[in-house]
Amino acid sequence: MNMKRTFGAILTILGIVGLIYAGVTIINHSAAATSISVFAIIGLLFFFSGISLVRVTKDEA
Image (cartoon, rainbow, N blue to C red; front, top):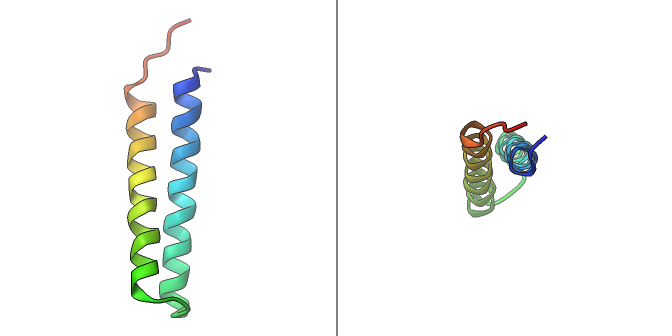
């Protein structure tokens, strides 16, 4: 497996975790709006950059 694909998968998983954490804090009302928005923005950034890195990287054997 390519190193870029591995890094893309890690970024995607971190983005999913960040989005889930932001969603849980929204539901529980346990954090301020600024921290929720920071987690959501960083989660979206990691998620979409990971997906695009996996999609763009070509497999070369």
